[in-house]
Image (cartoon, rainbow over all chains, first blue to last red; front, side, top):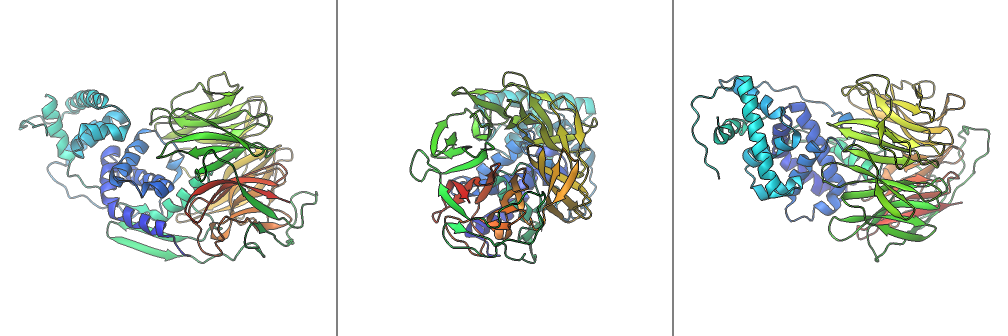
Amino acid sequence: MVRSEADEDYVEYVSARLPALKRLAHLLCGDDHRADDLVQESVTKLYTRWHNARKATNLDSYVRAIVVRTHIDNGRRPWSRVRLFGHPPDQARPESSTTEDRAVLRAALAALPAGQRAVLVLRFLCDLPVAEVGELLGCSPGTVKSQTSHGLANVRQALTRLGYPMTAMGSWKNG
Amino acid sequence: MDDEQTVRALLGLRDEEGAPPSVDLAAAMRMGRSRLRRRRTAQLSAGAVVAVAVVVATPATVQLVREPAHPAVAPTTTLGLAATSSPSPSPSPSPAAGPTSLACVESRLPVPQPNQEALVIGADPTGHYLVGRVYKSGHSSQVIIWHDGQFKTLTMSGSDPELRDITPNGVAVGTSFPSGLNSTGWIYQNGRLSKLKGPYGSQAVAIADNLTIGGTESKDGLEYPIVWHSPASTAVRLPLPGPNWLGSVDDVDSDGTIVGTVRPSVTSDANQGIVWHPDGSYQLLPLPTGVVAGANGMEVHSIRDGAIVAAGTVSDSSSKTMTPVLYRLSTGEFTALPGADLFIEAGNAQGWVAGSGSYDMPAVYTPTTGIVRLPTLVPHGTSTPPLGIVAGTISDDGLTIGGQDVDAHDVIHAVRWSCH
């Protein structure tokens, strides 16, 4: 089988960015297998748009947008039927003193509406400016800010409810 | 705890690493091609497609697996704009005689601007109407209706607008994403486009002559079949066999009979065909085990005059093969479609199937000719064609096939294959 140049470009581009896409998906989903499915679906969508997308000036941002929108838009396609070939066995995560805290944080994030979760992940865990978060989500900077505020309030409530330790916290500087 | 402290807490997840990505790029590419062909149900793989599997199990590892090529399809192919096939000894699914040969000529459909990219997504049963999408500059696009060589473009608000189906009287349905996040259904009737009433995430998939509209609602990542009983009504969910069942609508027959594909739960791959009758009742279709050895699933594609074209699927942990079959509601029996070694895009009541054959080339199958490879704008021989060549619709008489093709400059054109 002869693969086209576009296919080669696609494989090269996506292969290099899979770890970053997986990390974003993992933050959005809070679940490893769901994250793989989300990336799988996102790179599938990217493939359908590769004809034009490969010419994009900010392709990385475009692909992030696909991941985020796919996560939020409740599955435009029946992608949840997609099953991956040969999941590798789960890798054991080293135990650490923060494991429990992380679990609580993930639970707090997971409890948010998808839009608020995406805003917080993109804004604070992916370090994206408000304007780019707005572009990714297809909403105004004002909406990003209000969603940030609502999201943080909801996370705070969830952390409190879940008994997250609130000691030894320093102040956070807005970047 | 204030906002700053909350953000600081969240930053505890910043460096969190999950397991290495387990993403199958080959599957993504196959699925992507499938979607480019506007396939109505997601598919993972099929025996008819020559595949190069690229499994990326870790960030640093790319594994190439070559699968054996399938034999070439049409016995004879005339380069250029016609292809013919010799008769095959395959039995017909019905006593009616079919053609002994089929020759198809491809033509580009008109668009507003020269070389403007466009594609066909749906058609009415007569083949006189074709519907789809035409691209403007950038990523924006309009929907388009062709009628016997004439066309009309319409602006549907939202991204990714598309018309997916149309009646013989020219009433069309489609979908766009107005908010960028949630889809909504649309109807084109009496010269104007209007939104269909329904939940966020609804998509209009197909419309009957009596204006019953079938669709799918996406909610929280899950899909549910829905129906608009009339263009003015609000979409309601169609009944499913159990509380955890999911599914989607694939097509609507001219009398309002809706067909779809459902599964028992989000974690199940056990797809089954389903029929929702106009009287409100529904029936799960049996698996086609009598005509597809080992079939453990079925995915419906289309219904015409009570005849359902579907794929019987055989899945195991690593692969899935799909075999086209015909099921007649009147008899409750499956008919094999011998030699139909192709991806299904659409079918008709005679068991003709438009789809993709070997080398991912557009093809049409009839029970009496077998697979006939369709001509393309650029001859591709046995090499993999560019993305986006699709034979996606087929008329009741089988002689009009709508789709899309790619020229030598990588421009996608809406095309029609006229066969005789």
